Image (cartoon, rainbow over all chains, first blue to last red; front, side):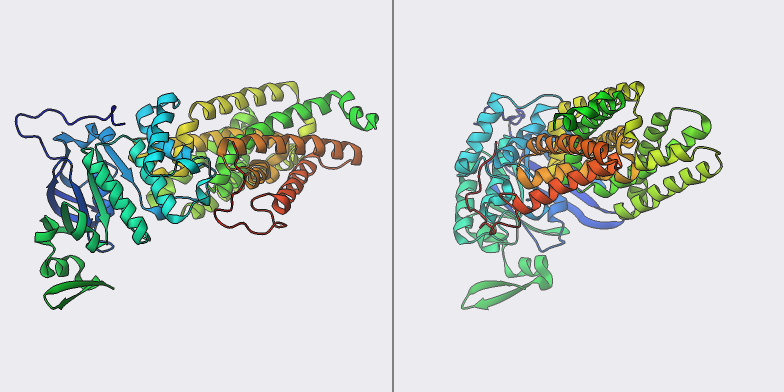
Length: 265
Length: 287
């Protein structure tokens, strides 16, 4: 399926990381949303981007995508500047930003994932339709291809957006809050899909509030609160101290018989 | 009966009116579908009124009124985009300021002109029965340009309308597409002004397309069904105005309004007269 994917360019010896940020500052007007963010994520990692609302998670994803120009700092994808990495990156925006009453079918939405590769004046061809169909099958929605998107349940709508991201044939996927409002079964299905994608060699950076999920199933975590509070293996870095610094008063930590329980406000 | 059907077409001006209305309703259904799904009805209304400023200035200078209308609408569209971006004001506030300003400019210029009262009312209320050969050629030319551009950039227009964030992330030039759509809207307004006038114009853009949205679930089908609604409204409206001596543009618009009300009552998915369907209630598939 990923035959058209752009592979990372060959380096001299050590392969460059999939995502690398060095001292990135960014914001809106004069208000800083990101202050000196530095971290890197290796190829084939499932990484969680953890932080409260307003911590700069969405801004960070937009900076990586090249949609928001940072004040200073460098972003590299497989060692290349982001201007040359657009087709390597796949993106899934937050669910609330999508107009569900719009007159399009599930299949048409997934097909939009192909548009970035087509360029102006070119129409999607047979191969684009095949890829869109495969992506729908991968998220288990092939039966609903001809439905208007508003007719789907919340969990199905999310899978449509993931299928659209997959149709971009990215090597790196940036997903903004894919777990919000998903029940336990839906979360399990999503994690299963993420693991499948990781097994295919794709790199995923997933912004989320869901700490237990990151702690249980992710390779890496970036704890963000305008600055990077901690970064590394979830088991090592998700300590009480780090979580307090990340979530400040948005999170209560209880220490019960040696186990730390996190309670969201 | 056949007299009722065929009498109107004995007069050449009625045939020209019919041709003009058919072309205008086709273009309006296509561009109007974007207006409806993007929630641009107010800016459509605004640009229609703003074109009057350009018309008045063109009158005073003795230039082409079509060109005046186009320049007025395009300049206002650009000004709305620019000012709302720079001043940080809400889009609809800036539309309100700009279009009434441009309209007032039109009134100001007209108040200094003698003997143009008839032309003024024809622009405000439309004068489709006065369409001449040159008008028809112009409507056909501009209409063709608009339809060809929509067809050529359909996927960009669809993507940026549905999900501008994702479109930008995919590398589409969202701002350029949006200005381009405003340009297409301005051109559509220029040809529709002659047919239905400034005041009723927004109905030609919005009503057939909105009627179609109640009936079908894909954007290009919405355009097709909207065109059918617009064409039928034009035809029925022309008959009504011929036989009952009514204002043509008002008859056309009210016929379209009736089609909308029928769809509102009987639409299989949204109709007022049917029980609400559950979210996944097996609604009929389209396309």
